Length: 251
Image 1 (spheres, rainbow, N blue to C red):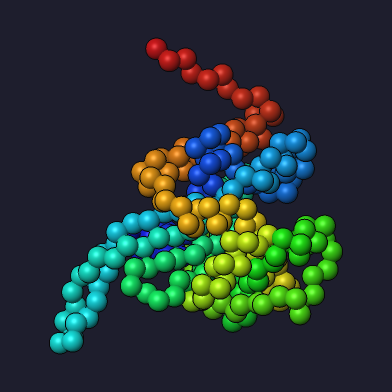
Image 2: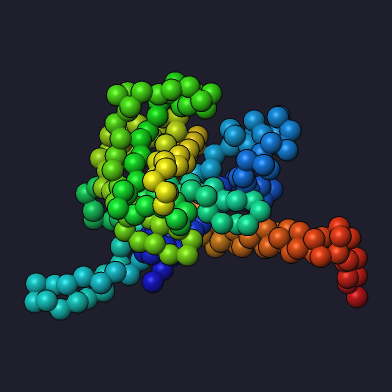
């Protein structure tokens, strides 16, 4: 099974932002990290697009009229956003529009962390720019102003749980002009957990050409390697009282 055909397992575990990864391997981390970031840098990162488009020719099984299964090749594109915890590399939230060659409707897919109440599913709503600005300031956005979608979970795996729903071209258009996508899930205690997904750069990524898969995968691998090194350094600091060993000199 290829990366994009998995679509919700490995398919959604892609990098947070191609621009950030390829440019400086920046990670959209947790709130503690964000608070330590200078305001000018934080503002610049907030304006940077975290959407990327990946396409792949994927082999899929299909039954013919006689009931025999044959393998066909279809092009699958994923316009994807992913936010990672900069300390652990774990996915905090991911969202994607999946386009499959030959299918009439695209699908909206979101992945949330494990520990959510599965029967409740996921709610998602596109906020226009004015509504998104209000939400960012923690001001109320009335539910009557929104057109929420109900997504059912389709798959859980070590990285999180994926929910999806077919969507109309109208929703894609609203995402292109919107301020953000708000994803709402219930945790195991029944308490709502909100996952905001900015839509900055979505339209450009969705309508533009796909990025080079190999270059992107390489950049993401480098990003995850940096996170693992930071995790290792933190463990060493705790064990040695803050003194890191001198790096080995290359011969």
